Image 1: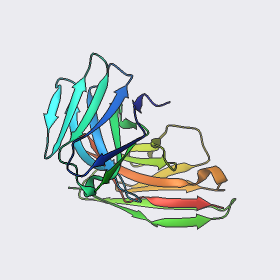
Image 2 (image 1 turned 45 degrees about the vertical axis):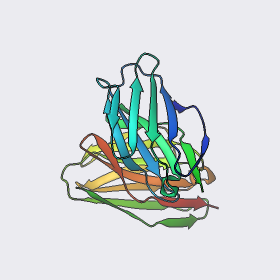
Image 3 (image 1 turned 180 degrees about the vertical axis):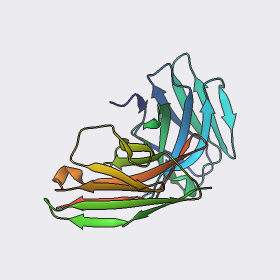
Image 4 (image 1 turned 90 degrees about the vertical axis):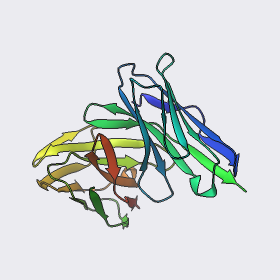
Length: 110
Length: 110
């Protein structure tokens, strides 16, 4: 079964606002987490990653926060744009592979 | 960086027919390769992974099989498709701890 889950299946935000996508994980031994973006009909694309020895990592317009105490991961997207509309997955390393959650659909409205 | 080729992009097959999906990788050698399946509106389920030629690990019991005849070739097969085999099939390659995905094959079994 999946050990990574998401709090909200869909999220609608206005263009220009900040978006926050949340994820809970159950394996306290997980040491590496990744966020992926998947556009319709395409394979997931890497956005940002974070190791368990960090609690925050920033990229271009994106920030990932890790709270190991409550086993929670979040992806923040600043100044959300129409091109950000997609499904976002968090994933945790599990042996040779990654375990993925069900995903959150982000819809950016004008 | 690696490039993952998957084909075909879409496939419609009758129940009971065989299946062969091919994935090839460029730009890397001796990669870990993966087959994931994604049902509509769901997350990614790991089906198989391979750490080398002829080495296949199956994550879930199912109607499918995988083979790795060459270092950069990974094949997903079935002798007789079931309706439940419908889904979006993704090949992935491990690089720098991250999974890089191909463009996927949308399989519809009718």
